Length: 263
Length: 225
Image: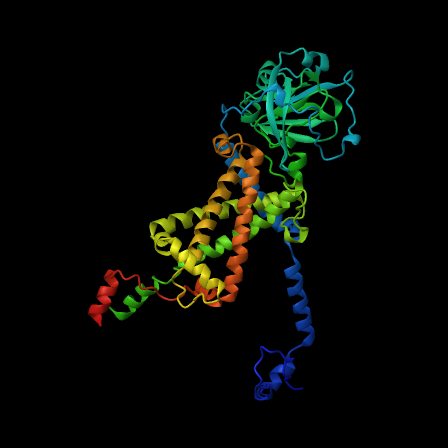
């Protein structure tokens, strides 16, 4: 065993490597376990290949990141301005049809049967009688021409109308001092809102788009439409509504998206 | 006053004082998180059809992880950045290190650089190109935060959004600020590796600087000697 002079390079000094150092430390060199070095080297190499993707799904990393996300929920709730209105637009700016968004393709949408559909009410609500399409569509309407902003980064201007959620909550005798409203949807999707957002003047149960009843891919018979949340918070094909003080888990929240997702 | 106390006071006036070094490396980690996770978020809805960032350069396996990292990193980047700005203004470091910018010097520096005669002898003084790069990247960082807040809260901070015109314009400004910072980082890291003494200085504090204004301790040091 000798210390070899490294390969020739114009950048290396001409002198060869002295063997004295090696002779002095021969014992030490022989003690080095080659396997350990190989193994250690491999794990070090693996570590450098660890991009965020692997680290992100680690349970402890997820716990930490979700704790920050919950903190961000609180911050967003604190900076929410209950009476600050989102800008509205003119009818000529409205995109028809609206842009489809869900966690599955538009071909896989299962239309809701309007004749048998009922909106179930639960939780801290005085009048829990279910609502039929006809009853809901007979309520006074509010129109919103607002921007839809998706968590992915795209946006469009849509024209939605339907009963104002705050007025609807008052009509059914809901406890508006409760913390949350949870929605269940015909496709199994779950979503929930903080009460201040539910009571915001620009939050409606949309039944129409561009003055026409909303079509199947966009949430017939009713969907939520609020001007202060990202697109995915606007539950479609709603079948039940619950007013509660217990935090209601949501479909995307469980996947790791920020629950509050205010804009 | 003992010589030791004088010496310890002198240590406080290094080229890069300890608070600055701490902020620099916190910022390095924060910017790494923000760019990597930002690229993940960008890939979900690209601004330019021809530009997708390679997945191995992004942080987060799925979009939600990219978002989680981004909205975690924003606190570090924002708070640390604010501390840096306050520090730079309050201690006079910005004025001392980054000003004045003289256009005549800029031309001379570029000429020297092109003829490979750029001097690195004094790492305590920035040349005009360096000054402009540092001023530029600080501005890009500020623009990054403002455009980021406008995208995060286009309704709650609608006043900020009006600065940019529309949501998509704010998104574009956010992207361009990122591009400017990445461009800076390429030059910054390449030069730090080419002139390693600058990298060492950011770890150890570098040489003590004489700011030519006698302070109490240096007067006392003279008296003591």
